[in-house]
Every structure is written in C-alpha cells, then in structure tokens.
Length: 228
Picture: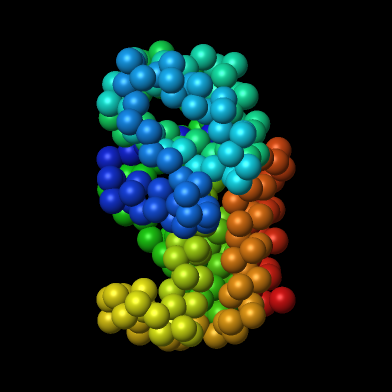
C-alpha cells in the first residue's frame, strides 16, 4: 500500500504516522533516510521487503523532489502490495514539481493543515462520549473524503486506545491530560466491544486503501458497529 501525507501541520503528520506504527508488530517498522544517493538502495529494500514475512511499514521523508524520484509504474506496484505499507511524508516537497505530481497520480495525499476543522473531533465525541451513531453519521456528510477521512480513522483509533487505557489503568492512562481522561470517562463501550472495534478499524483501514468502493459506505458501516 502507498500512503502520501502532506501539509503544514507537522504535529498532525507525526501523530498520524505514530498511530500507523502502533498497528504493526515490533520490528516490522522501518524509517528510511532518503536522498538521491540512497534512492537505488531504497528501491532494492522495498523489493526485498516481501522476504521478511510479517507485514511491514516503511516511512520516508524526502527533503527534495530528487530524493523521491520514483517511476509511476513502481509506485503503482508498491500501492498494490498488501504485505507492505509505504508512507511518504511530502511536506517538504514543492507541489509544482513533476515528482510530486507523479506521486499524486499514484495515490492522493492526505492533507494535514493547521487550519483546524473540528468536524472529526465532533464525530469522535458523538461515538465515544454521547453514544450517538445517528449524530456521527449526520456529521460524516460534511467531511472531505480525500483529505479528512484518514484523520478521522486516526481519531477513532485514539478514542479506542484511550478507552482501553482507562479500563486497564496503565501507564498510557496515567500520561493522559485530565481533560482527555474526563471525556474518556463518558465512554459507554465494553472491553469486548472495544477489542472488536479495533479489529474492524484495522480492516476498514485496509479496505479504504485497497478497495474501489464507496469510502462513505465503508465508514458508515463501521460506525454502525458502535451500536451493534
């Protein structure tokens, strides 16, 4: 799979990448320092990644367009591989370059902008705090599916993680801000339901990136499981 991230909100990008790392086994995540001198070895590394067995996540942040000058055919090949997820942080790449446009043809970038839109937060609150799937589905109609959908799945992942942390009273729970703890305390989900939703969220993430079907429909189906 190929995931492109871009935008001027570095914190949101880091949080998104962090949330993706947590879905992979220990030792199955690689962060590659990429430049034009290492591009050839990077391609060899990706080609050989199928030999590792477990599904792998590879994260790169090129500093210039020449660092990530990959052919469209190769990008499409990476996009079709289910045992590999490549995340490319394009925040430093000029959008007017041919390289950026080639990457964009292969996979639409997820944009993280400092211009805050609280729709995603409101959807997450509707699911976890209010227990209102109906309200979440109504708010879902107002999001931009190209730029905001994966931010929303990241927020839902965070909500599930915080809810489990509350149940287990672990170190992650102790480190949460008091306001987040207070909000999480309103969650009505059982431990069994949270664990099931974790599995469904992982499947949703794969389906959103690999299936040529309605993204809205997939997200709606997932949300309905909150009340199932």
